[in-house]
Image 1 (spheres, protein in one colour):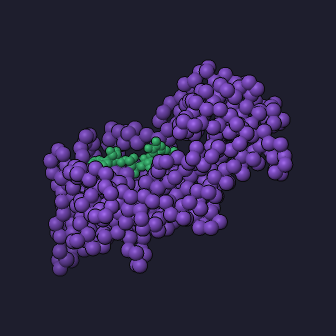
Image 2 (cartoon, rainbow, N blue to C red):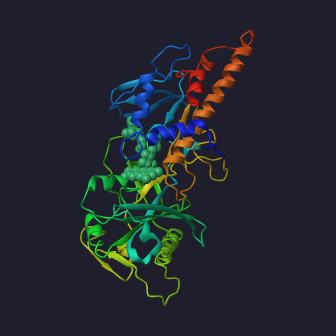
Image 3 (spheres, rainbow, N blue to C red):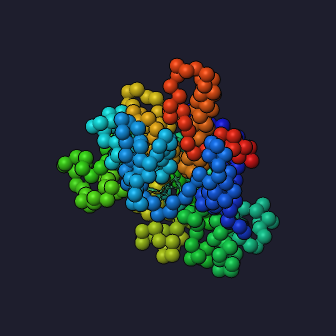
Length: 428
Ligand SMILES: Cc1cc2nc3c(=O)[nH]c(=O)nc-3n(C[C@H](O)[C@H](O)[C@H](O)COP(=O)(O)OP(=O)(O)OC[C@H]3O[C@@H](n4cnc5c(N)ncnc54)[C@H](O)[C@@H]3O)c2cc1C
């Protein structure tokens, strides 16, 4: 699939998301552009009436009510919401919409959706903290301002065995006065998680060191059949289940994740690459070079406050995190016939007339990229496809108005937005 990432609309959305947080801090925020949209009423009905956009807070969707393969209402904690002829787009993360679909469209009646939850990917990662004396870099010495200096780099990689992707995010920090203006310092770090603690910075200022934080990320193998997400009632009976009595339909599910050889090989490659990159940064290209690298060691499970700097690389148990991030792939998009995807290339659930999906659940596989920008691109592509269909339907409808043989019933009535107004907005 191709997405047109250079389009003005994408730039506008990314800009909107990124530039809302004031001095020295740029983080994503959905609420602001959404409220802005509501206040300026950039969406309106087909007839040009205002304010069709409603924000309903604390409203939990429990089930999709359907008739003959068409979603007709949402069952929520605030009562039922009728859908009329609307298209329903699930934009609610990864595991929540999977739970909703499993509860609403059982595969006993919707065989094309049997794949939901049979695929699961996420990112695993290692974190390595290392330091080098500042005077190792002669050129750099001249440029240092005395205040905090921060740099970040992204290094993509590929496992030679499985050809699976990974990447290393390296952030470098130099701070002569770590306790001064600490709030501002924290704001300037490129990512919250891979950032040195006050203890790590303080213990590296005399003599001055540059601290390198490497976060290395790779994705679970999507072909691993031992990884799944399903309703508690569908868990294989020989499996040990934790908390399977939950009757709340928004979390009556169980997930199993087991690393396989492909994952383990990838993780080994990731760690080897991280240490190799750090050695290059330490300017020790040959094994017998005396390397000035030091690593943060902590007995207390990744503690950033209690530990010490040592010459030897830390053991695997200290750098591999026992958490998964960026869940994905539970309802992947595709046109593959041998393992049918639950969602077709129009983002629509197979066998369901009017329910669409966006978000990370669509990934056919994990890759190693951070997900947000790709999700945004997919959501915009879905909007574009719906608008194109709407446009085509409208043209057909106009051409057909004089043809009395055609049934002009509700089928072509589109709710929700005005194509021209949306078009205008897309050029902002
Ligand atoms: C600590 C942390 C750091 C991260 N860092 C990065 C990063 O650096 N780069 C990056 O690219 N990604 C990062 N991510 C991942 C990124 O935040 C998510 O992938 C992204 O927010 C997902 O967007 P989404 O719109 O699909 O879902 P979400 O942002 O999860 O939004 C889903 C919404 O649906 C609502 N919802 C769910 N179920 C229901 C229901 N039944 N009824 C009604 N509403 C419901 C939820 O309340 C939520 O508001 C990070 C995530 C975390 C937690």
